[in-house]
Image (cartoon, rainbow, N blue to C red; front, side):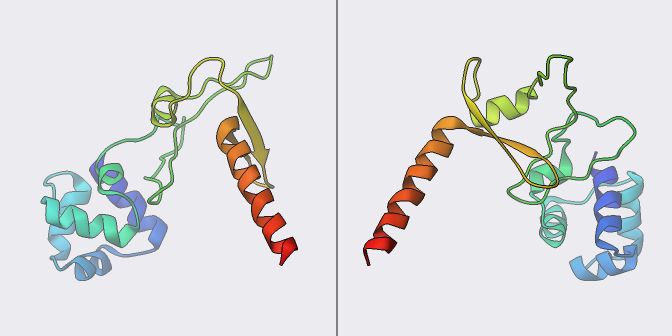
Length: 146
C-alpha cells in the first residue's frame, strides 16, 4: 500500500521523484526504490513524507478505504476520510462502511441528518447537528441583543 500511496501522492502534488527526494533530504534513487516497493523508508522518512503530502502517517502507510472499482484512491488529507464505495439499493438504502460506523459510533436505529452542497451529500448524527444548531441560535441571539 505504501508504494502505491507514494506514487499517487507525488502525482497529485505534481512533484518529480527528484523534487520529493530534495524536500525530504534523500537521494532520488532511494525514493524510487520506495515507490517500486523494493525498499521501505524508515519511520522518520515516512513522517517527513506524510508532512510533505499533508496526510496522516497512518493513512500513508495503510489502506483506509475499501477498494473503489477501477480507481486508485489516495490517502485523504489530515482530518478527512475516504471510506470507500457503497451502493444505493432500489429502496435508497446505503450501507455505511464498518470502519466509518466504528469511528463515529454509529449504531442501528440512530438518526442522521442528510446535508449536501453541489458536489455531494454528508450524513451528520442528529444529536450533533441539533446541538450545533442550538449553539448557533444562542450566538445569534447574543449578537442581536448587543
